Length: 79
Image (cartoon, rainbow, N blue to C red):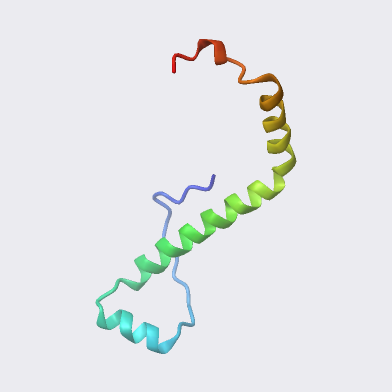
């Protein structure tokens, strides 16, 4: 899973809807922080979406095995 903790910041240029930008400034929003957090969340979402698609067969095979054989250490479960 990608981690973004303590990564350096890099300046970039964005084209944003002028009305949205004006309202965000009126609301006192920190644009850099907001965009950074929302972009990180979207990157994570897309990463896992891609991971699930790429590993769909392996996950299905594992689930079928568990359905057939049960959990490997089930006899040691106390709940």
